[in-house]
Length: 219
Image (cartoon, rainbow, N blue to C red):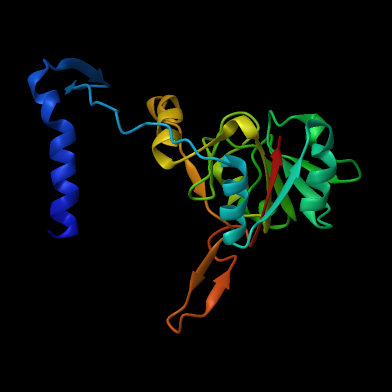
């Protein structure tokens, strides 16, 4: 079976029982359509013997840095993660207790231009969820996470993630993100620093986003 046929087969299977349920009329602007409930039984949890340890291992597989700390050591850990960066942008709503001193802080209110962001050394944000199996962090750009440009332009991204935000696998993360999706929020999935390969398979870092990612894991 080809991959395309397998994917379409799974979609048909997932939607099979919704064809039996009556549609609900919806109106968006001047367009009226229908919505059918789609079951989400794939959004299950996965028990792992060492969820946090696996998350750290997989994040580091992407050549990112992880600093594990307790609640009282977050600011110091963030300072280590910045690696000497001085000009740092902080998104609205970020916990001020997590910000180290002696930084040239830049606020994103009003929104900085792309050129101004390019002059910033680093950005510090929070996240909404982390995935142990894939070593991925996800931002839905609510308070403390900032708009997408903040995490795509500066060369260094330090992201603070708490232990309770780490889930086992992607389906559980999808379940946690359902409200963000319903609200129409953008999602940014980050697995390590930005990297790509040219035609000769030479790895190039920092092309499509931050060259350096540091995750501060608060336990």
